[in-house]
Length: 214
Ligand code: AP5
Ligand code: ZN
Image 1: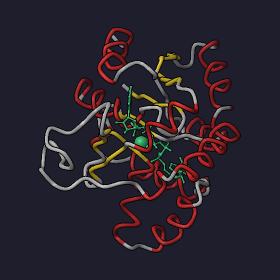
Image 2: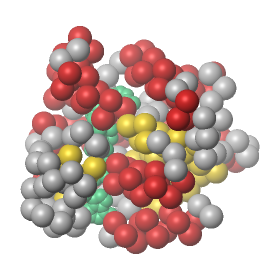
Image 3: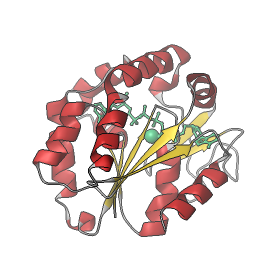
């Protein structure tokens, strides 16, 4: 199964990716996690990406498309993958099409901006694994610690309210057009398009996905 998770920052893509990975046994490809990995490793890409991400803007299509193409060519992607946070511009979507990457399902998480701003203020992450928590809505078993490793959780640099609002603006301008793009693909029978109410509690969203993806 080849899945695209589409939705605003904080819509729940990373959270549901954890669930879908286990359900289908396919890897999560989060371009955001890949970029944060490059920042942590201090690579030239990381240094460049940090400035852009802290400003709430998008990293260039060229760089991102290169990263994803390289990643999906790896052996563990043979039976499918979950794209989380990619594509997020029309050129990125076109690049997948041009490369002959067939997508089975596009899942759109629909969540209003104000809900998102509140969610982001309580987000905690385990950077090494990409696992995501929320202090109220999806708390770890032990406060401040990752469930699987016990390691400390952290707050993402781009989760300040001001940056979240900028990211939402960028989403509406550059990523939202992909909704129409993939709905048109669905009309031609090229993909399945699923719109999910992302404001429901985490388990209910997972349940909806389970029902719809059978
Ligand atoms: P990226 O890491 O992809 O961030 P994003 O798309 O902005 O999305 P988030 O990770 O913030 O949100 P999410 O939908 O995964 O929500 P989550 O599950 O964590 O990208 C970061 C940056 O990298 C970009 O700004 C850009 O600069 C760059 N970048 C990345 N990809 C790029 C690309 N393709 N092209 C160009 N640049 C790129 O949930 C959020 C919070 O809500 C958590 O606390 C969670 O516990 C909670 N929550 C989740 N679901 C629910 C629920 N149902 N109810 C209540 N709370 C919930
Ligand atoms: Zn995410």
